[in-house]
Amino acid sequence: MSIRIAFGCDHAGYPLHVHLIGVATSQRYTVIDYGTFDQSSVDYPDYAAKVIEAIKAGEVDYGVLICGTGIGMSIAANRHRGIRAALCTTEFEATMSRQHNNANILCLGARVIGTGVAETCLLTFLKSNFLGDRHQKRLEKIDAV
Ligand code: RB5
Image (tube, rainbow, N blue to C red; front, top):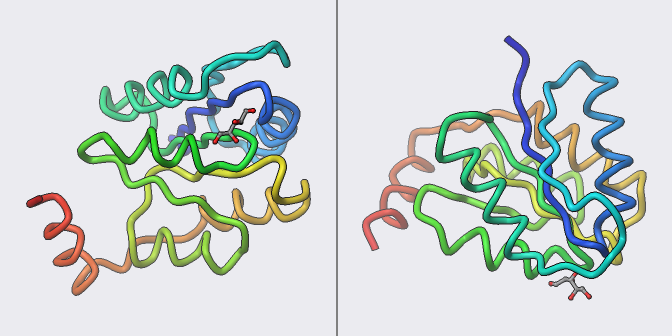
Protein backbone atom coordinates (compact mmCIF):
# COMPACT_ATOMS: atom_id res chain seq x y z
CA MET A 1 0.00 0.00 0.00
CA SER A 2 1.33 3.43 -0.83
CA ILE A 3 2.18 5.94 1.90
CA ARG A 4 -0.86 8.06 2.81
CA ILE A 5 -0.42 11.77 3.38
CA ALA A 6 -2.90 14.30 4.79
CA PHE A 7 -2.38 17.83 3.48
CA GLY A 8 -3.68 20.96 5.20
CA CYS A 9 -3.03 24.66 4.75
CA ASP A 10 -4.36 28.15 5.32
CA HIS A 11 -4.86 30.85 2.68
CA ALA A 12 -1.17 31.81 2.71
CA GLY A 13 -0.13 28.23 2.12
CA TYR A 14 -2.78 27.41 -0.47
CA PRO A 15 -0.80 27.82 -3.74
CA LEU A 16 2.12 25.75 -2.41
CA HIS A 17 -0.32 23.19 -0.96
CA VAL A 18 -1.91 22.69 -4.39
CA HIS A 19 1.51 22.40 -6.02
CA LEU A 20 2.81 19.84 -3.52
CA ILE A 21 -0.35 17.76 -3.72
CA GLY A 22 0.34 17.53 -7.46
CA VAL A 23 3.94 16.49 -6.81
CA ALA A 24 2.96 13.84 -4.24
CA THR A 25 0.20 12.46 -6.45
CA SER A 26 2.54 12.22 -9.45
CA GLN A 27 4.94 10.23 -7.25
CA ARG A 28 2.14 7.75 -6.48
CA TYR A 29 1.63 8.74 -2.85
CA THR A 30 -1.95 8.54 -1.60
CA VAL A 31 -3.10 12.07 -0.79
CA ILE A 32 -6.03 13.29 1.27
CA ASP A 33 -6.69 17.02 0.92
CA TYR A 34 -8.14 18.61 4.08
CA GLY A 35 -8.13 22.12 2.58
CA THR A 36 -8.37 25.02 2.71
CA PHE A 37 -9.65 25.10 -0.84
CA ASP A 38 -9.04 28.69 -1.94
CA GLN A 39 -7.21 31.83 -0.83
CA SER A 40 -10.00 33.28 1.34
CA SER A 41 -8.72 34.08 4.81
CA VAL A 42 -9.01 31.21 7.30
CA ASP A 43 -7.46 30.24 10.64
CA TYR A 44 -4.55 27.80 10.40
CA PRO A 45 -5.33 25.92 13.69
CA ASP A 46 -8.56 24.65 12.12
CA TYR A 47 -6.65 22.93 9.31
CA ALA A 48 -3.92 21.64 11.61
CA ALA A 49 -6.68 20.00 13.68
CA LYS A 50 -8.14 18.18 10.66
CA VAL A 51 -4.75 16.71 9.67
CA ILE A 52 -3.95 15.73 13.26
CA GLU A 53 -7.30 14.00 13.59
CA ALA A 54 -6.51 11.94 10.47
CA ILE A 55 -3.11 10.92 11.87
CA LYS A 56 -4.54 10.01 15.27
CA ALA A 57 -7.29 7.95 13.62
CA GLY A 58 -4.64 6.03 11.67
CA GLU A 59 -6.13 7.17 8.37
CA VAL A 60 -2.79 8.52 7.13
CA ASP A 61 0.91 7.94 7.76
CA TYR A 62 2.07 11.57 7.61
CA GLY A 63 0.76 15.11 7.53
CA VAL A 64 1.92 18.17 5.63
CA LEU A 65 0.85 21.55 7.02
CA ILE A 66 1.55 24.77 5.17
CA CYS A 67 0.93 28.35 6.26
CA GLY A 68 2.78 31.61 5.59
CA THR A 69 5.76 30.90 7.81
CA GLY A 70 5.00 27.33 8.90
CA ILE A 71 5.38 28.57 12.47
CA GLY A 72 1.70 28.78 13.38
CA MET A 73 1.04 25.33 11.99
CA SER A 74 3.97 23.82 13.89
CA ILE A 75 2.95 25.47 17.18
CA ALA A 76 -0.63 24.26 16.76
CA ALA A 77 0.37 20.73 15.77
CA ASN A 78 2.92 20.19 18.52
CA ARG A 79 0.30 20.78 21.22
CA HIS A 80 -0.99 17.28 20.51
CA ARG A 81 0.43 14.16 22.15
CA GLY A 82 1.92 11.79 19.61
CA ILE A 83 2.40 14.56 17.07
CA ARG A 84 5.95 15.47 16.12
CA ALA A 85 5.70 18.36 13.68
CA ALA A 86 8.93 19.63 12.10
CA LEU A 87 9.19 23.03 10.47
CA CYS A 88 11.75 22.55 7.70
CA THR A 89 13.45 24.98 5.35
CA THR A 90 16.22 22.74 4.02
CA GLU A 91 16.74 19.20 2.75
CA PHE A 92 19.03 18.54 5.73
CA GLU A 93 16.33 19.48 8.23
CA ALA A 94 13.80 17.32 6.41
CA THR A 95 16.16 14.33 6.55
CA MET A 96 17.02 14.84 10.22
CA SER A 97 13.40 15.40 11.20
CA ARG A 98 12.66 11.84 10.11
CA GLN A 99 15.94 10.13 11.05
CA HIS A 100 16.34 11.62 14.54
CA ASN A 101 12.93 13.02 15.50
CA ASN A 102 10.57 10.56 13.79
CA ALA A 103 8.52 13.56 12.69
CA ASN A 104 5.06 12.66 11.50
CA ILE A 105 4.15 16.11 10.21
CA LEU A 106 6.18 18.29 7.87
CA CYS A 107 5.46 22.00 8.27
CA LEU A 108 6.42 24.42 5.51
CA GLY A 109 6.33 28.21 5.22
CA ALA A 110 5.04 29.23 1.81
CA ARG A 111 6.25 32.82 2.34
CA VAL A 112 9.69 31.61 3.41
CA ILE A 113 10.89 29.00 0.95
CA GLY A 114 10.54 28.61 -2.80
CA THR A 115 8.68 25.89 -4.62
CA GLY A 116 11.82 23.90 -5.47
CA VAL A 117 13.05 23.79 -1.88
CA ALA A 118 9.57 22.85 -0.70
CA GLU A 119 9.44 19.95 -3.16
CA THR A 120 12.86 18.74 -2.02
CA CYS A 121 11.84 18.98 1.64
CA LEU A 122 8.66 17.01 0.97
CA LEU A 123 10.23 14.20 -1.05
CA THR A 124 13.20 13.91 1.31
CA PHE A 125 10.88 13.78 4.32
CA LEU A 126 8.84 10.98 2.72
CA LYS A 127 11.88 8.91 1.76
CA SER A 128 13.80 9.20 5.03
CA ASN A 129 13.42 6.69 7.86
CA PHE A 130 13.61 6.94 11.63
CA LEU A 131 16.86 5.53 13.01
CA GLY A 132 15.41 4.49 16.38
CA ASP A 133 17.85 3.40 19.11
CA ARG A 134 19.10 6.40 21.15
CA HIS A 135 16.68 8.67 19.28
CA GLN A 136 13.73 6.56 20.43
CA LYS A 137 14.83 6.96 24.05
CA ARG A 138 14.84 10.74 23.60
CA LEU A 139 11.37 10.78 22.08
CA GLU A 140 10.12 8.73 25.02
CA LYS A 141 11.42 11.44 27.35
CA ILE A 142 9.37 14.03 25.45
CA ASP A 143 6.26 11.85 25.71
CA ALA A 144 6.82 11.36 29.44
CA VAL A 145 6.36 15.11 30.12
C1 RB5 B 1 -1.54 34.36 7.81
O1 RB5 B 1 -1.48 35.71 7.51
C2 RB5 B 1 -0.29 33.94 8.58
O2 RB5 B 1 -0.29 34.52 9.84
C3 RB5 B 1 -0.21 32.43 8.67
O3 RB5 B 1 -0.22 31.90 7.41
C4 RB5 B 1 1.02 31.88 9.34
O4 RB5 B 1 2.19 32.40 8.78
C5 RB5 B 1 1.04 31.84 10.80
O5 RB5 B 1 1.98 31.34 11.43
